Image 1 (cartoon, rainbow, N blue to C red):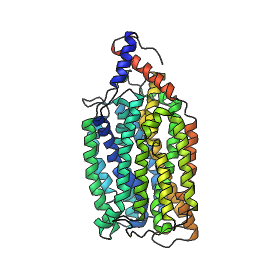
Image 2 (image 1 turned 45 degrees about the horizontal axis):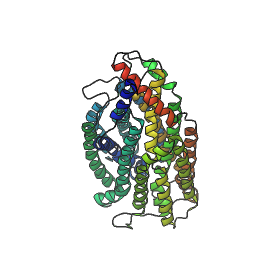
Image 3 (image 1 turned 30 degrees about the vertical axis):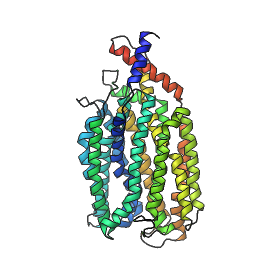
Length: 475
């Protein structure tokens, strides 16, 4: 082995991270999901059944406000890529963005007593401001994974930690929000949500600061001159990135539609009135808790699966199997609660590895872009993909509002056969179709794990040559 090869393999070995740093990074997604999972599962229900806003108007709001994200997400990526501080490019935003994020997440559920028009305006303002705060802190947070290590395998491991932490937060949300809001509110759901979100706000800020303190940035871009036009060209010429951009939209539409339907499905179809069936937990909480626990178990299998199978093939197979389990819910009768829990556990266990896999694939597309163009645009790549996810969530949530309105849903009343059918479709067939569309998009993802490994070695060699003042070959 020649000296250059030895240096390359040594550099790759140095890419290994400690357990503490991986866990510290993962806790940042615990912070995010203490709010974001509440938004995904409870926000449409809160706006319609508690705050008293028409579901169609909320559907419009979810989609219209994405105009702001279309500008703010890539802009934040551009700003982050050009940030230079003693803490790095991305970590400073975890420090300074945490408090606004916590305050605005709480404000969304403060529930002031305004007129109908005032409530809608308040929802627009607080939701838009919160999405901006989410952008400021989560675009850099997501991009940070791409510069902590040059190793694709280590990034997959980091992503596994991230999503174990993320779905641990989701489990906490799914398990404890309904009993917490019932206990803290003393029968007043609005007060219960307000106090619950106050607690989550404090924990979110503390966890983001922990991520800032425990992580480091190590991968440095090779290009020295800033050129926005070339950065966008490099991203748009990145075919793997384009396929994942489309897949993200369909996947998050699926998540938003199904999560948005959970509270309605159990309140109106299953008939969950909040009575505990296990300790302090009602049917909705037990259903979400067991499913999210299974998802965490699935995430724990990610690294083993990634070592044995190609990430693209795993993504397609698991997504299609999960779509099948979601579709089955359309034919499960309301009295078969135990069957619902079992099918949900199977589906969430199956889909568990996919979030970590797809985020590792996002980092691989950043490597591919640098390998092909010579420009590393980690922040821009992740911000644009995050925009795709937020767009998918917003369109999916908007569709949920439109579907409820189209099928004649009336909040806090017995539902007609038509509106009940709409709720059941939202929880089963519609998300299954969207999940299948996401799997089709991933089918066109062109990178294999062997190609990623080759790119990883070549980039390490280029970085080593750059550090020693030698010419760098074109990608």
